[in-house]
Amino acid sequence: MTIAKLVTLRDLDLDGKTVLVRVDFNVPFRPGSTEISDDSRVRASLATIRFLADRRCKVILCSHVGRPKGRVVEELRVQPIAARLAEIIGRPVPIAPDCVGPGAAALVDSTPPGGLLMLENLRFHPGEEANDPGFAQALAALAQIYVNDAFGAAHRAHASTDGVARLLPAAAGFLMQREIDILGSVLNAPRRPLVAILGGAKVSDKIAALQNLVTRADKLLIGGGMGAAFLKANGMDVGASLVEDDRLDVAREIADDAARLDVQMLLPTDVVVTDAFAESASRRVTPADQIPPGWMIMDIGPQTAAAYVEAVRDAGAVIWNGPMGVSEWPPFAEGTNRLARALAALDHAVTVLGGGSTAEAVDALGLTDSMTHVSTGGGASLEFLEGRTLPGVAALMNIPSDYAA
Ligand code: ADP
Ligand code: MG
Image 1 (cartoon, rainbow, N blue to C red):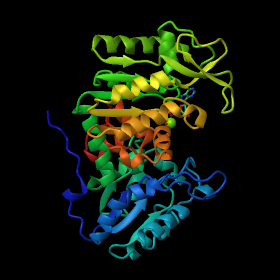
Image 2 (spheres, rainbow, N blue to C red; image 1 turned 45 degrees about the vertical axis):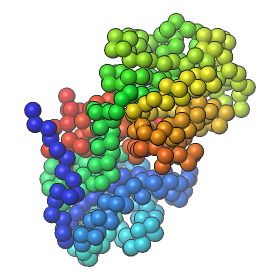
Image 3 (cartoon, rainbow, N blue to C red; image 1 turned 135 degrees about the vertical axis):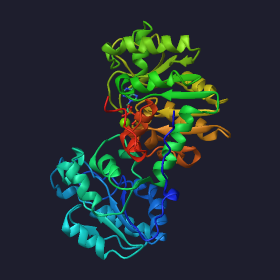
Image 4 (tube, rainbow, N blue to C red; image 1 turned 180 degrees about the vertical axis):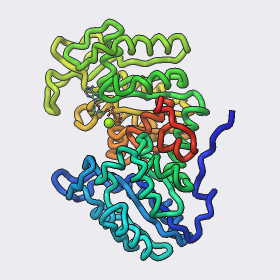
């Protein structure tokens, strides 16, 4: 079997070339405005952009923003993002008002070596999400080389992540490369013991990841809303906790796999419960098998948090996806926060985090830099943990993605 290798920026002769760079600049805006609330996605691709500019490339940036569904939506123009990039990088970032066509081509022509140009929102064209060959061709016509640094969009087979990669010499940017290297090594050749921590709202979101991780991890720690499904599958009464009853069998199967594969699986032994799903609801801590009728699980309890902190203490590597409770609300963030602090304090373990809410919780504590890696791709990192070959990665390696099956 040949193992396809990712082509990286250092593998190509880039000097003076015109390079189309797919970035994930799908930044969050403050509600009802075009004011960027978090520019970390822009910062995450700076290394790639600077590297290309330093090689006197014409750097033609393209991204999607939001979900305009193939139409022009004024609030989803790239202008504020290009302005932020210009501010951070200290160079002008002009905008091509359309991402394809003669207007864009003329602006590419007039871009000086080492200069930047940002194309308008890719998803203003229906051909982007449809992976339309004509649209991919139109993008490819603008450049000589294609670079994909948009790990956050790599789980989508769109024209700018798949089609165009098959038309031009293609390479992964530094961010894409780092994401794949770190997520790949922690999954496929981790330091041991490998501790996988899964939380978040629903079991159904994480089934495939659980099924894959249970075959790879030495310990599996379960928290969040989905903990209720595992407790209920064990015969406990979880009160008014939201449980997907059609997923109890899957929860049982995963627990059986864990037992068969000698994976230590930890479930909450105590929980923080409330009588309503509200930040200000009255709360109590109860043993997991004594949840009062009508009350619901909002966080892991202090005893569970202590056990989970203890379980990661000897870890060689940790993979964490999904908060332990409703971490957006401070009264139910304690379990998540204690775990985050414990991971940050580990000296020798590789700590890899994925998931939007998980990343936010860790960032709110100022601990992002204390982790080995916090993935920039929520959906993409989850699908990576499922063991799938992401279409955007497959396209860079010129192999078929396993999504087609
Ligand atoms: P991530 O974005 O890190 O992948 P998810 O999207 O799977 O995580 O889940 C995050 C969501 O799960 C958060 O909105 C959080 O409020 C919710 N959640 C966590 N624990 C619970 C719980 N016990 N009950 C209800 N929702 C929960
Ligand atoms: Mg999420």
